[in-house]
Amino acid sequence: MADKRLKLFPAPAVVRVKESHPDKFSQRVATILDRYQGLLEYHHSPLRHLSNSERRQVAECLMGSVVDALFIDCLDQELADAGHDHLAKIVADASYANRLILVESLECVLALG
Image 1 (spheres, rainbow, N blue to C red):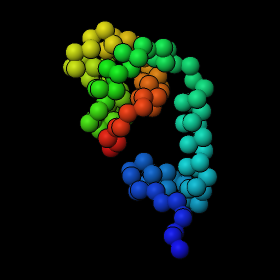
Image 2: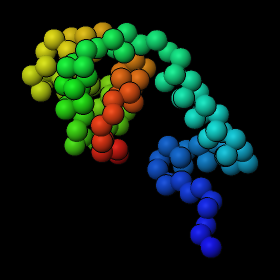
Image 3: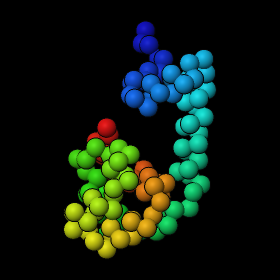
Image 4: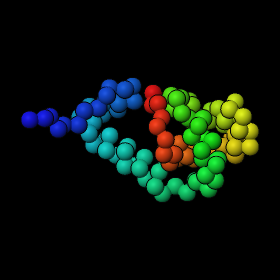
């Protein structure tokens, strides 16, 4: 019989939550995920209005990259380095939350760090 319990990889963020909430780890993780899902679903990001072509350019920039917090923070620079200067200017004015929503909304395979 297969073990169907949820297993989490002990990434640094997971370890920090476990250490800060040892008695309520599952509850804390559930709360964080609910809030994150709310951000993705209910926040009206101006970057949601990018054209399909612009979204493809962002996706190309993400492919093969480790998309961590620093990468998302520097996404405008990554786009400029890839030759997408107009798009880099648009993203430069966006908040971190809006950049995160953009990255999460793209349907491409990302190398997660």
